[in-house]
Length: 393
Image (tube, rainbow, N blue to C red; front, top):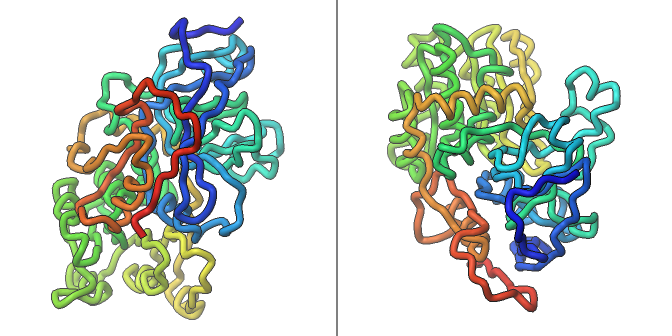
């Protein structure tokens, strides 16, 4: 038996399809038929992160990938739900849920011991699956999203504002990368390289875990983000370029009186220098977490520096279930002024503008957290042909 929240749902679903680098169009797809093992999500919002920018530009995962619906941070309301799926997921129609990117097999050796991020038999993931894989609607830039039987989801308080609830993924990254992997705890000093959403999230996560001192870096163009970082609990902000730019290693040496940091976290995209900085700002025996993707670039790494200083270096692959649960609890606690992070909301027809606004490619340079709400400004006029969404460059 399948439950449905509303009796009348559209027969077709609008979604944004990426067909190549900086090339998007709106298409219509048949609404999936839901059986006992799957479900349908009405997408309320999908957050945009730095990896969306690089995917949009064609810098990640190759330039020849087949057309797909982007959006890997979907938040929404369960509209249709099969009886077996309801029992498996512990949800019901009308629940608000956040989805993880990975759809694991749930039966391999890694999945059975909780390492589902390492699943070698991953099924169709959110925001990455080609549209020729039926029923096509796997990405968050769509009015409705197909919930596959093995999807991983988390319930979120429906009373939270949509754009605040949509921060579950960046905050989950801050929790996992700074606290779970970096092991930041009471009295520790953390250096965060990069003042994007996940850098700001790491500030909150570290402070919630009891960090004594949090230092975050940014560019001259990030001063508005660094101001928000201070509101969220950062103790020191360091601009690393321009006339007022400082060397981060010298700054950390001065701030800590030469003790250096316990943990550093590199979140900068496509840049090589911050990797070395991350190694140099921590104390002997310190911990370094690398999370900023470099687009396949070869990054020089001094192994002597690692060895002689006894450093532990960890790569941060996404956000796992435990970190998402902690992040959602932090969201729901109201402890931090999360409204200060959200700056822009766009509709489905404005996905290119949304991505370029986050990237700083538009005249407005104030973006921090940006969402797409697929039902925002929805018209009743059907789309009879693909509608091109043009980039600004």
